[in-house]
Length: 218
Image (cartoon, rainbow, N blue to C red; front, side, top):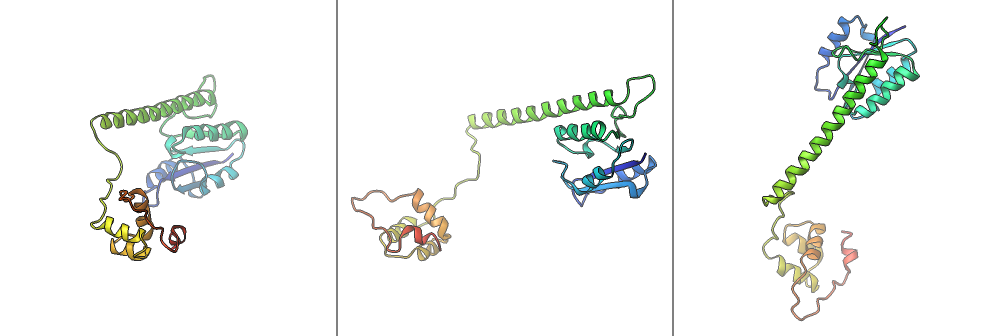
């Protein structure tokens, strides 16, 4: 039987010293502690993968808190089930003693209670995520009702756009020169030309000689 520790911090700037001290006080040797310095959104982490390859039946995995395993409780449940049911190892969460799958004599504390607590935590986390999304949707709806607009403000067309646009469409000025005169990129100018067609003056606008599609390749 071996005892391993697992540490996760979400970035290289965060300090894992607090977790190291907690695991060290529990008697876990530094060489038996696996560390990941990245987000807890999933379990595709090098330290975690190495730990799972090392873990054997009867071993114990110790973490300081449940959020060090990750942020997605559905994936935590899946990993927890694999460790305790498939691998037949145990898990201990130091700051939540009920999350301890080690069997205790003559009481129910162990895998059953730990699984139950983890299920409850998963439900609470999912409910809170749904509440946050609902509150966000309600807040956006209320703001829109007050006339609040979301998204980046649209930039006004530069002065002289209509004149340059007409000259371009009539073939009197090439695409790159037209965009340059207005301080625009070629792609932006083409998009604005398409979005803001000239008012019909009774004349048929001429298509540029080299063709719209070819000009877009510049």
